[in-house]
Amino acid sequence: MKLEIIRGVMINGEPVKAGSFVEVDRALEAILISSGKARVAVEQEPAVEKSAAPSLKPPSKRGRPKNSFGGES
Image (cartoon, rainbow, N blue to C red; front, side, top):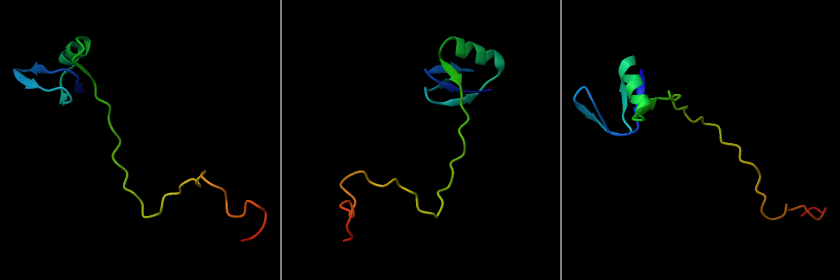
């Protein structure tokens, strides 16, 4: 299972820094999680490419619309 290391720890004689992601067996997983040194890694969705279409922004709420007095400009 893939884990995210929360605190620095030694795994199989190798130092692993906090913030690293490692793949371990179930026995080591249980030890690391129960000791508060790791948590189950959350799979992130792949980044979605930005489309060529412009983003739709909500209208600005600052100021008044040009035709706020009922007449045309």
